[in-house]
Image (cartoon, rainbow, N blue to C red):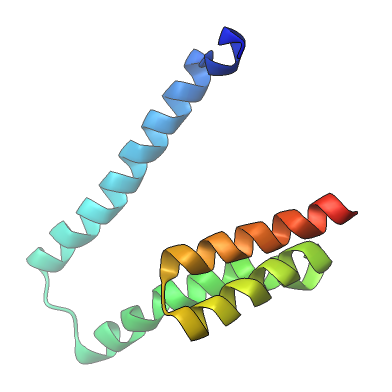
Length: 105
């Protein structure tokens, strides 16, 4: 195995660190904000559905325009999650199914 495989570009490392810091700031900022204010029941109800809608806003376009590979990955993930109720196994099934379609093209 070549040592070049493990070479990390400093800009890549910086990007990863900054993305992690931004993620932490967003999550921590949300917790801080909700300790400072008391949202109304309407705001709480709206925020309850935001994570699901954000997830759908990323997944649906990929499924609509992505073709067979992402569709088969999503189907494998959903079926595995329904029957196994194991998130890790469902993710693995989706990745394997998507990779299998990619290998067959």
